[in-house]
Length: 538
Image (tube, rainbow, N blue to C red; front, top):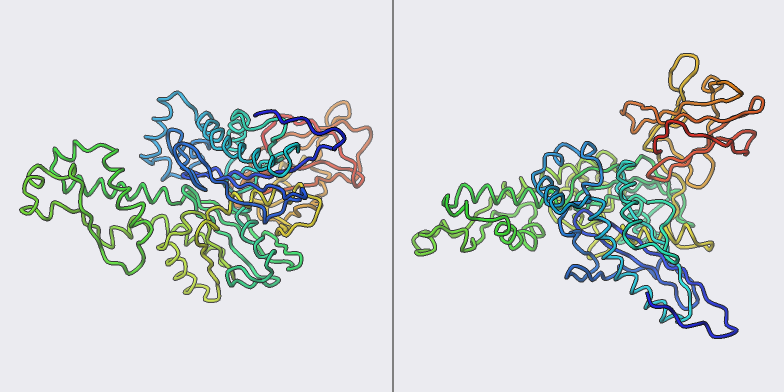
């Protein structure tokens, strides 16, 4: 980056805070930026989706491809993926392509993020210079992750960011990731706090419940809130966030498989064997991406499309009128519904499991007409009073990146901002201590427990949970349960040196939406220095 000219003598250097949010998606990624105004104040209304220029693309979203696709799905361990993704032919092919380049998922992610951030950083420099060419700016980047991403996947993403040539003296990463679902909720509901009681006709009242459903390319995230106040606008998370591997890219793969199956049955054998993956992708792009995927809806009739010349047999190419049935590929309604339904039904059932008064559909796949129609039918049958809001244009699919910016502003600003306040979150994990008397687990936090976002979440330690060793050393064995039905597992042994018996021992827990933090206190607010043995990332 070019150095700035010296500040004129006698004039203090201005310091401007800039906030950025990165939505690293399976199929598309977005960046949002908030630049302060000329007074130095930064507000949500200053936030906009950055027009990324990278990889010969230009727009508010850029394909997550460098050079292979779906590498985000390789950041979690394969065992943490659902069965249908573990056996996905496309994921297997793309993984082998990446490995043939001798690049890990972290390598590709790092390169990709570095490229898309470079252009954003250049724009930030230019915009700040327009405000004050001598100002010093500091950028805080908030990055989003899926709700259920395990610790090792978050570690790999963090490693990729660290090695991507993004961070520096004036660019730092926010203290924590934020889940894609919470970021979406903050962006969409903060519009309500700017214009109270009105979000595309949705009037909020205290105790109303709202589901935020972010339907992306590879995952669908869901989070449920209840409104606790209107002025200021504040909510509480009423159940742990959920995430399923269901999204637009999986529907794309299903349609590609359908086309390949039809071609194998209908094309002459020599013709089919000569077709390449590129041939199929070009044909699918022409009839699916800008046609069937967008326009297909309930009640539509079947359709057919003219086949490219390389899909035709030699006789059909020479005498097309004599072989009219060979010139087209026909798709019945059942064909198309069968492509959508396995994914769409998962999303509909996810929302149905936590039906609320308001449902906000966001994300790129949230714009899908077929999904929207099936969601409204489900709501009409099971919860007629539910108001489903589907966002048009880029308001829905840029919500994750914009919400990340809002979260950064909220976490770092001392002034009151028109951003929805999340007062409490529902823990997705349980934490307990092993009893020294009967080896049972004494639970301090259960999955689903509501924990204050900014306040105290103290849990007294039962005396029988404290083990006593030699030389006055005491310790507890912490266990973690990763969900209501999960088998508890050993997390860590926490030990401390005590001079005499410590009184009123308590753990103070904080759930940030992705991981649990805790400190050990005694006598109200004095922190006990802990040594973590057999460390497991919490």
